[in-house]
Length: 261
Image (cartoon, rainbow, N blue to C red):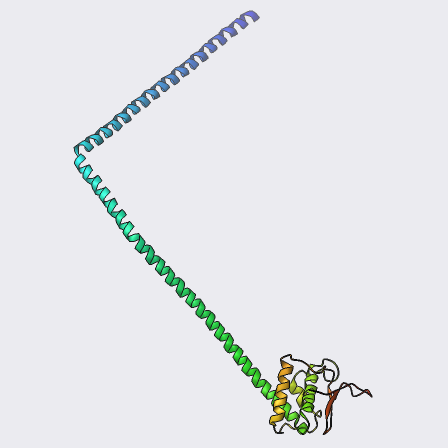
């Protein structure tokens, strides 16, 4: 029974294998048929497109032959128009270029003129500002020289050397950075400090000889000219015969200085 059962199974497997082979052959046949049909369609499309292209080419040749006169006229017109355009371009372009260069040069010249004018205006403004500052400084110096002349009114009978000596006492009190006069920072503060100058009265006359000496020495001091004495000499000793400066009131033998010219 086992043998018979085994034979039945072998027959069934054989039938199944035959069916699979048939299905595979059918698929192959269909694929080949589809490929042949595609090739036939491709060949037909190529023939159709070729025929259409040949017809277009034929029609173009026929048109050229039939209308060759018109084509020749169109070609001549195109060539003539191109020639006229080239001639006009050759004739007009240099003029346009020259005009453009001229306009550019005019704009450049205008820009340079504007810059030069702006620089000149700036220079003029700076010069005017410097003039105003100089004028203001001159007025300040004149006012200070007048106040200094008023403060030295009691020294009017002394010599010019004595007046110059007295001027530097005022300047030194402005410049010194130590001691009892270190807090004074302007000439006006030094002149108007109470109880410092013999016979000082703001209502004193401004004598020309005192003003001239004061203004001259004031300019030397402010302009950084030669300083005849150091700033330590801040005390003034006066007599009708001479004026000299000392650097201390506490020492028995202080250093002294007097302008010698």
